[in-house]
Structures are given as structure tokens and as C-alpha cells.
Amino acid sequence: MSPRHKMHVDNSPATAVLHTRSVPSTPTRHRVRKVTSAMNHTPDITSIDAATRPALSPRRLRLLELSEEIEQNPGEVAFSTRIWAQLSLPYRDPGATVPHWSRRNGDTTLTLSPGPAGFPFGVLARSLLTWMSTEAVRTRSRHLDPGPSLRAFLSSVGTYPSGANQRRVMDQLHRLSTTSIIIETSSETPGRRTLSGQNMHVAHRYELTYQRGADHARIELSEPYFEEVMRSPVPVLSSALAALGGSPMRMDLYVWLSYRMSTLQRTTTVSWRQLETQFGAQYAQPRQFKAAFLKNLEPVKLIYPQAKVAVVDSGLRLHPSATHVPQAAHQRPRHLRVG
Image (cartoon, rainbow, N blue to C red; front, side, top):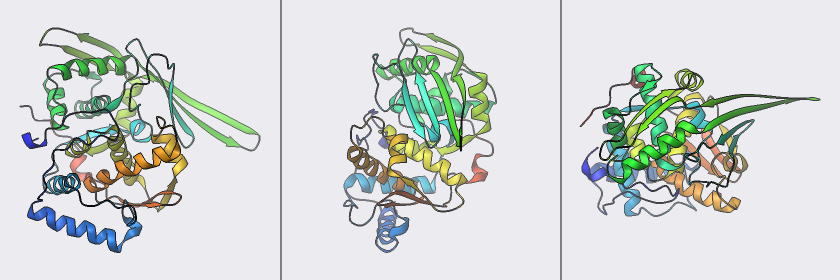
């Protein structure tokens, strides 16, 4: 990532962190015309309808410019996994007084119980989970050594693990390593209800060494979590995560759309209620969630323009679309460059 892409990480779901320029490049002006034309003439497949579409602000123009750069030079392929594409972590720290955290997607519920360090949350926890999945797929090993590869990955997604950020990395690694996960699915037939689930941890063993200027960690993924990663990796672009990385909701929406578009066979509508139970557990009112969702969806759609989605009265309509990462590009993940 070039220096002009450097971003400050903020765990607030609606905080904009992109450095902006008011005058777009020539390719970006072409893309502005292309996107504006699509929004004016094909409202069924755009992210925001004409009535709610914001003006082309400097930040939005910058996102279009980043989208153009990603299209021309996609960069490294990273991997999330199906769990975090369907069910996600807290945006903010729920705090020490909250015993459990739950999210629901259809008939499936995720429940997190914190360890001694508390709940994992925010942008950094999501980036670390993506690094873990990427390394597991790349090495086909449960044993992770967060050294140069982690520093390179975090830099590639806009987080620079030095100074105060290094301690935040260690803190979130501790939270991720000690939180227990329950994934439960409910199925019902007349007169019968069945609950099936799985208990797991991200880490089976971990070692975190705190040393001035030289913090170090070793992580061994648990067998169930490793199997989940290897069974259902979700390819994403680290450059897209960097462009969206100031907001955990944007990251979640991007990973979710990447997953849904890889499996979607026909047009479907996800209701506002379903979206709120999946993405909006930390909003007090449905209208607050809807406003935040629309605000965060816009940059995701600009960065992932192939995703054909439409905001409708009942929710979000998804049309079968091209994946953001071409299939051939993620058959064998490349080593992340260091330096």
C-alpha cells in the first residue's frame, strides 16, 4: 500500500477515515460518469436509490478513485471464512458486565462468551481473523507465527502494527484466543423443533510475549476452527479491506456480499429485520440501524461495483453478480510481501 493510502483505524462503525482529494483523476471521472449513469438509469441494481443518493463528495470521489485502482491492480487475495461472512463480532466493546454476545442470521445464532481479556471487537479483531484464515489457507497448518506475515498483512489492510497499535494487536489476539464460540442452528417441523450446534475456540493454544519494542505471539488454531476455515474460505481483496477498513460494518458488509455473490443463484430480498439481527445488534432503534446500514453500504458498493444490490422498501435486494475476486485468482493464495 502506498503512503497516500495510510489510514487511521477507528472502531466506530460510521467513522470516515479516508484521506480525500477534491479533484479526481481522468480514469475516475470516467468511472463517476459510469456509476452516475448506472444509478440514474438502472435503479434496480444500484446500492442507493435516486432519492437517497448523496452528492459526489470528495470522500466519495476518493472511494471511486480507489475502486478504479483496485480494478486495475487488485493486489493480494486474502481469506475470511463462512462464520464471519454470516455472523460477525461486536463493533464496539460490549464491556465487562455483558456475559454473552449474540448475532443471528436466519436459523443460525452465534454466541460469544468472553475470556479474561474480554470480547474481541472492531476493525482490528476482524483484520486479525482475516489474517488467521489467510495464513491457514496458505500454509495448510494450524500453527501461526504472527511475525513478518502479520505485519505485512496488517499494513496491506491499512493498519500499521507499531507503537500503540502493537499493544492493541496483542490485546485483540488475547481476546480472540480466549473467547468461546457457540454456533447453533434451529430447525422446525410440525410438532418438532431441533437444535444443533458446535462449541469451539479460535485458538487451541496461544503464547503472547510482551516485551518493550518486541512483542511476540504464537497461535495454534483449534481443530474445529481450522476445519471450518479450510472447508469454507471466502476470498476477499486486502486492498478492498484497506479502503473500507475504518468501519467494522463496512468490512462485514463487504465480506458478506463477497460470500453471498459466490453462492447466489437467483434474485433474493433480505428483509430489514433480518439485516438488523445480523448487523445491527448495537443500535437502539431500527431507524438508527437502517441509517447506519445505508451509510456504510454506499462505500462498499463503490469498492465492489460488480455487486448488484438494490435498496427497496422491504430490505436489500440481491441479484446474482460476479464475485470481487475471480475464481482463478484464489486457487492458490500468494505469499504476502514483506517490507
